[in-house]
Length: 157
Ligand SMILES: [Zn+2]
Image 1 (tube, rainbow, N blue to C red):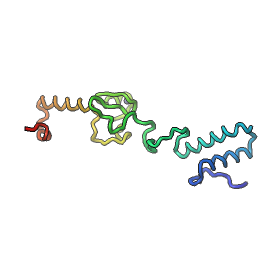
Image 2 (cartoon, rainbow, N blue to C red):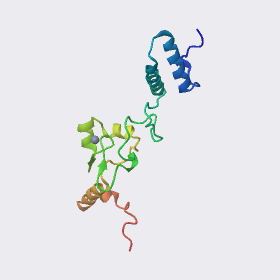
Image 3 (cartoon, protein in one colour):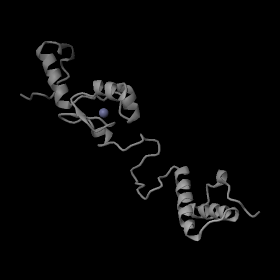
Image 4 (cartoon, helix red, strand yellow):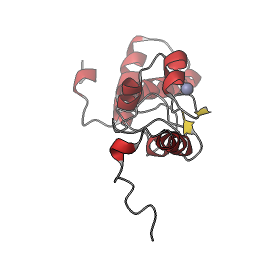
């Protein structure tokens, strides 16, 4: 037998070479109609592409991250907290606050979710206007006094 393609040692071989090698050795041992060969090649090629961590279809995009979640987020994770709502990166729905939704719909704790989408632990999964409203309410109720002095620059004389 000549050089059999060895799947374990193919870092340098091109997909085409690998595909051709596999298909050829397959044809050496199997009867096949000539018009089935292209399909076989396509199949083998796709399989190798998958093994290499790529996608079999031509859709491979430059934005895909090797270690990211299994689907693309509906918005950039860092932009998911917006003025009036927060986008759930899991399902694309929007909420004022995500915490309860994550738990009930996705079985995720806030921290799991942040780790999953590479979000800073300090990030609040609450619509900006909503959290402002709440801190304003807290202030109105006299709860914000401990943090007084942080609002520097808010009101200019
Ligand atoms: Zn969701």
